[in-house]
Structures are given as C-alpha cells and as structure tokens.
Image (cartoon, rainbow, N blue to C red; front, top):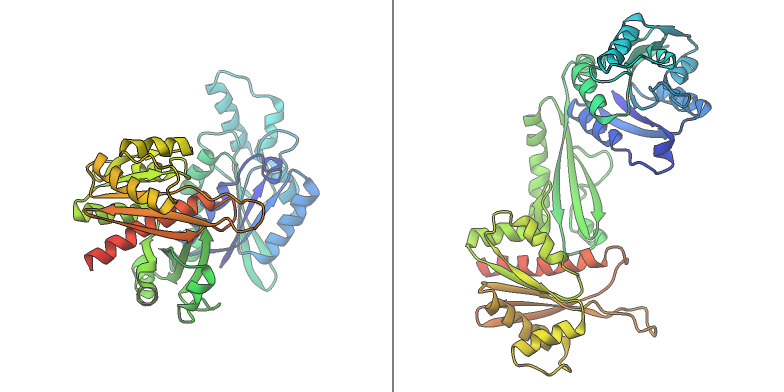
Length: 416
C-alpha cells in the first residue's frame, strides 16, 4: 500500500512559504506502515489540480492532500476532486450548520461565500474540523481490477490539519492496513571522509532492494546513514535493523560520532561529561559559531567554560600582547600554539580548542590554503591543519565541525 501527499497553493509553488505539512504527513504515514512514494505540489490552478489528482488516483492507494479548502475563489480542491471523478458538488447540511455555528461563536454573521466550504463531491463524506470553518473530505474511489483508492483532503492550516489527522484520518488508515505493518528509521551520523570514500568502506548494504534499506545523505559535510525497516511492530523493525547497524559500526569505527539527532558538539559534550573535564575555545574565522554550538550543547553549564572570538588581526595581536608576545610576524601555527596554551590557562580548563583564520584566495590560484587548529592540554599543544576547500555555503560549518572532530578523536585516542 503506497501513499501520495499533495500540497496545494500558490504560496507553496512560488516559494513564499515552505511546505512542512507534506513532511509531517509522510512521517505519520510511515509510522502507520504506509510508504509515501510521491510528493506533489500544485498551485491554485484548476486544470493543474485536476491533472495532479488524476495521476494520484491512478498510481497511489492513499492520497492525503492539504490546502485549497477555504471559501475564496482560489480555493479549488473540492472542485478539482469533483471534476477528476466526474461528479457534482453537493451541499452537506451538517457541515453548513457547523460553519454557521463557528461564525456565531465569534459573534459574526457568516458571509454567503462560506457556503462553498460545505459543498462536497458526491459520494464523499466530511471530516470534522473542530476548530476551523473548513471541513475535510474523505472518499473511496473504486478502480477496475484493483484495490480502491482512499482520499483524505485536509485544510492547510497545520494546527487544524494535525488535529483532524489524529481524530479521523489516522484511525481510518489504521483500519485500512489492519495495523499489520509499521516503518521505522534509524540514523547513524559520520564525519571525517567523503561520501564516496565512506560508501567504499561498507559492504554492499546500500544496494537498491535490500532489506532493511540503507540510504546515504550529506548535509554540510556530515554524512548520515539512514536504515529503514518495515515489520509488524516497532520491536520487530529494531530487531531487523540491528545486524545492519552492527555492520556499519564495525566498518566505520570512530568515523561514527552519533545517532539520530546527534551533532558533533553533542558527541564532544558526552565525552567531556564522562571525564568530568572542561573546555575553552578561541576562534578567528568562524565568528562565534564554535562557541554557539558548544553553549547550546552545554545547557547545564557543566563542561564549556567559554571562549574568545576574534574578528581581525588586531584582535589576535591583542591576545598575543596579553602573553607578552608582540611578534605579529609569527606563523599562524606558532601563533595558535601560544594562544591555545594561554586560553586554557585563562579559563582554567582541561582543554583549549582553537580555530584559526579562514584563508583568503589571493587571485593567483583557486586554492584557498590551509586551515589551522590547535588543541591545548596540560603541558602540551597539538597543532594540525586541513585544506580549506568546499562550497562557500558550507565552509564555516565544515571548519567548525573539523575543529570539533579534532577534539573528539583526540579524546577517544586518549581514553584508549
């Protein structure tokens, strides 16, 4: 049984608003064991809506659509469904009574135009909307030689849509599926190699058609492996995924820093908390992003002592003068070494993590150069560098992640 989610409205196709309803509905369908194969987004055009619904009725077993159920001329969902199925719109008296009562409760007279919201395609039924004037629509469309298709049309207002889903749509779909299957996902987060390199480190577990399936995505240099299983219960899904999860862990080792919603700062937070150790930072090129991420991960103020954010050469030289080092001609690696030791002492921390300046292209080459990191511990400072490469949109986040991963791997190595 496959589903299609349709989002309707010019505000979506124009990019004025982000379609979060489709994401939410697909997640809920998955929890009920229904795989969503299609997402369609269509503007407020009757012909376009009819074409989208025609295709959806043909290729999907369950259709859930949102939007287009208001009273204005550009709200075309009910008319599009009726034209697709070749039926008339018929007034639903109970829905009209509810709409009138909603206006009365607000001490307003219902405009005649709102009557259209009580018009439903022949053969369909209203889905109650307790807190809005737009009832939903549910219907069963018979298909020759195939299982019927079920459609559920809901308002685009997220609060109304979610309540109607919980009260009516979810129970109806559970009845259709018999509650026999559920779909669950598990995410493993990795950092430190490229997507292709990581895939080569794994056996053939990302092959199409494999169960459980494994997908790989990259977002701002973080690689996510998403394991998906379908079974009769959540426990059975987890059991089916476990051998694959174990294989991934064995193959990737310390490249894995977390699971599900973990980010690198959470991995660092966990390691420092386990050791009852503290951290301070100095950052030049990242504008405070390193401090922000660590602060967010340390909600109880346990491990992160604070940091210094430099935004110019003069600011760095001011730090150097604090430690009686006025030599501004120091190489960056030497400068970071001295600053790291100073920051650790200044904040009385177990570690000081420093991120250097972001290289700037000089015009003679496309290469930006090296990015330097320093990590100060008691009696020692380690400096390393990495190529400053990548798309401009991810350079800052990637640099901060590289710094955090430097600390993470150092902490793991020291414990081993």
